[in-house]
Amino acid sequence: MNKSTFVSGLLLPGALMAAMALSAPAHSAELVLVSGDTGTGLGLDDPTPKAPVGLNPGKTLGDQRTKVYQFAMSLWGAVLKSDVPIYIGASFQPLACTPTSAVLGSAGTTSVFSDFAPGIEAGTWYASALADAIAGTDLDPGFIDINSRFNGDIGVNPDCLTGRTWYYGLDGNAPADAIDFLDVVMHEIGHGLGVQGFTNSAGGFLAGVQDIYSIHAYDNTLGKSFAQMTNAERAASLLDTGKLVWTGQQVNQEAALILDNRTVLKVSSPAAAAGSYEFGTATFGPAASASNLNGTIAAALDGGAVSTDACEAITNGAELAGRIALVDRGTCAFVLKAANVQAAGATGMIVVNTANSTQGMSGDDPAVTIPSVLVAQSVGNLIRANLPAQAAIQVDPNLLQGADDNGRVRLYAPNPYESGSSFSHFDTALSPNALMEPAATPTLQAQINVDLTPALYHDIGWTLNDGDARIGWCNTGVDVHEEGGLIVGANVLAWSDMCESTSKNRGKYVSCMADYTKRSLRSRVLTPRDAVGVLVCSALKR
Image (tube, rainbow, N blue to C red; front, side):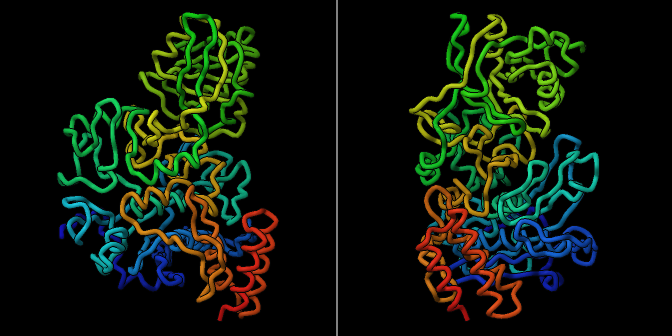
């Protein structure tokens, strides 16, 4: 067996007092939280009083954060099988942040292992938690398997995502000015569980050894898998936006259950620019659709040194009003461009990329209410040379949004390379947005739907809990997870854990679960038949 360590981690013997484990039903994975904030009065240990929010009963800021983390561990623990506890380090720290963008969190495995069990891919790295699960034993006793950090400046530092804060509810009802912490924790734990490639920006494998994630990557331009490429070819592939795809069978099988049909920008006139063009989407403003992005395209001009990038106040507002603004990418934030053209009366924005590829646009500004898309440089230049042009969003019924023409889901490969984001995510072109995209989006509901993530786990070697949710010995009849990413049974078990940990006696537990069942019936998370099973099993729990 070979091992490589990324983070020395927390020695468990000295940290177990800060460790919180949740009881796991038979065959479920047990995830154990090891707080790096214990004794600091910060982060998960913050004593600031807080009123309960979004079904989170915590009474302090630290307690609410901890309960969200425990809920996320219950969800992933229910979905996955492992006989070995998974230890997860967590803390709040001042991560990179500006008024319009931020690193919400980061996480990954602390160690990787190869050649540790028969039947696995030879000469291939596996993340620590996955390797332990396959081996059936802790390959690195005494150390955490996953390390995670979250941005402690959000909602505290006025210059960090100005006007935004964390939402610590468990119900998926984050207000427009808040970021759902549960979604982010689910995403970050997801990286540590194996949604993480170890190919560096120069195309090199870690210590020259391929990893189980990277061997599922394929480049449509080169017609090669990552394992077949040279370092130089892999480096180029990491920048090949829209062409780098996942070959795992389960992900691509389930993609058709999840992804919408592909949307394209259809330019109808003049004839010289006519065609159907792919585009990148934005994390700000409404999603572009046939109803909100259609009409005449006009070039936006501003008073800056580069007059076509909308980085300054628009100077041709009369020409732009009621039209779709065409702007060059330039160097300023995408949200600033959108705000400037919106102020001039534009109904939408098309950004021309600096590379001949599409990619997503990140940023955050609740004041932006117009749709924005990004097109490849060659497409944008063609449109600019033929203005005014008529365009609209249209749907291709035969292709999937975020997959190639063969139905293989795209991986995130922006140009330039983004350290910490490139490759180890699905592409931002997916619609609906996926949990494992590089940016949090308000459409996520990770408490009940984790889309393609379990399918990816299956592709890299995890065994999933394919049965029903059991409270103790009692079978509720609710599927733990389903193809397509629904995890209703896991949600049942997470609430059972939450009710058990916050109830003083059995009667309080049963009452807590009855309240959960009523809510879930009203929201149609549970069917009437599901609800009966949950109520019966809750009443029988000892």
